Image 1 (cartoon, rainbow, N blue to C red):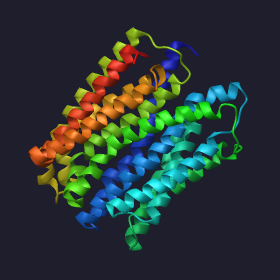
Image 2: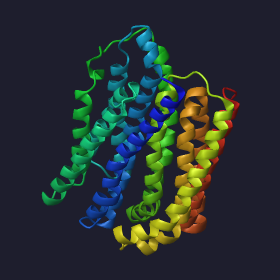
Image 3: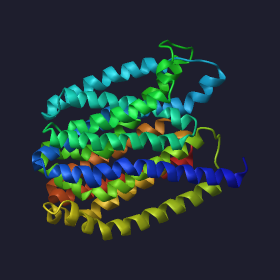
Image 4: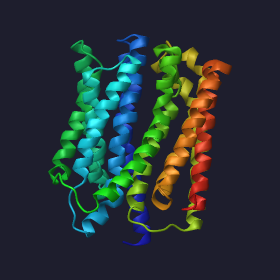
Length: 396
């Protein structure tokens, strides 16, 4: 494949993956969640957001670790004609996920057995979707997300009109998408046995588990930290103020996924291309910030008129956080591929410490506004460290 055709294919894959991710995000954030807010109390809504955050930090992280490790090592396993290891890790991670979710839900006084089941579905889907990334088949990711979106719609009507809990929105969504993924994957058919690479792979998993849990904790634990400090009502206000910015940041995730899929098959990247990429990322994030700050108030007054006034002054700050997150998300695959895995632990550990300190100090100095400023500073620090790591490559 010529260089020009390859670039066109990468761009097309990015567009397909962004659209594929946008559909379920759009349904949840701009349609289902606002409609659901009319049927449940502010406290219940806050508990829902906190519960989903816990699931994504724990189960989402573990599924993502297996996904990335499988993607990065798949060529090695195929070249050595080895099959195994990963289903053992999958079983371990499901058991670990159930235990951690149970303890966390008990501590926060939220969640139930259905939420733990959702966590298992999230972990399974998170890992098994690597089938499509290995083959760079982003069209199937698009179809998979259509199944998830249809499941969300079915789950919403089932929850609202059958007077059951909101959890069924996520149960139906993930069950539908997982059925499609299993039908198009052979991962679960692999033998449950150890290969000669088992302990080397375990080392990769251990490093990335710490890094990924820290990264997801940064993305979701703002809601978890707020909950014990000011309660579920505060979670609702913060979540709504971050809505549009985080949606845009989430849509950067699919771009990162495509980048890592192609980087998995590369051995180096030119410095000139590296610098050009950073300039483009900075420009896109700056434009994204301006657009978000201008249109977010107009969207929120339609979706959440009851919370509009409380969220208005937080939008410029939370949108800045989202743009720093987007910047970091695009750089992260390069650091994961070309730098020592230890950078993942170092960067996310420092960011999490900055995050917690900034959030707590900010809240006690300036309430919710100070809280948001503290988080924005933490994510700015993360972006700077990622850029530094990539420039230094394996030096640590």
